[in-house]
Image 1: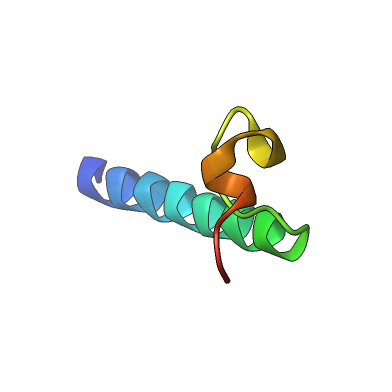
Image 2 (image 1 turned 120 degrees about the vertical axis):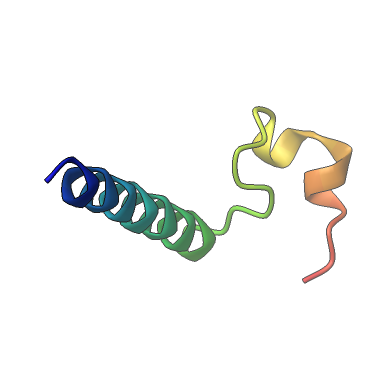
Length: 48
């Protein structure tokens, strides 16, 4: 039973992480998780 709960929690966390990344990409974020977002040189110069 504990294994099923652990697998379920990992699955939920994985789903939420993927959903967050997809939403950020649709919003135009280049460097997801970068604290400066569009202000740092790495994020603003990134080629798509």
